[in-house]
Length: 197
Image 1: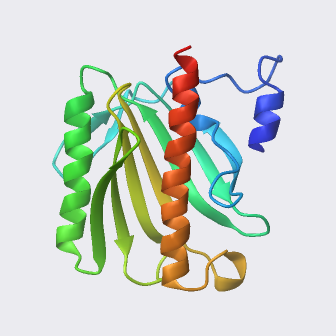
Image 2: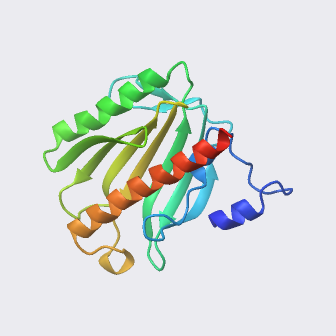
């Protein structure tokens, strides 16, 4: 389902449920980063366990009160990003953040072909883990943390055959990845601020 269809049908019988206020800013971002579009929107099943595996630590779990998956692609290309916006239990958020942050650092330490970076933008803290070459099904991921409302956004950046992707070189991929992360954060920050008024 296209995101536009989900928005148009909101509130109608049989239409997708509206996300809770805390997740709404993270789900309805579209058209940023050079025109990337959200092409599917799925809600985490209400029957799912209130957690997910968080790392290689035995039994390490990350709380998930609610969540959505949004797939993004550019026009006439296959999927570029698989985004998961998840609401942590506020009493567990600090531990959840610690678990997933250490997990990415552990992955980078175990594989020298991965680059780990950390930065902040508009009140969000971010980790990116990126392959140094265009290989495999996934080229990297980003974790975006919103301490203000206990939200963890995880983005997997996907690889495709050259004819089905917007980038052809590793440098072009990095440019698009950075534009996606910055654009998404700016959109989410603006939508989150609008909810406060």
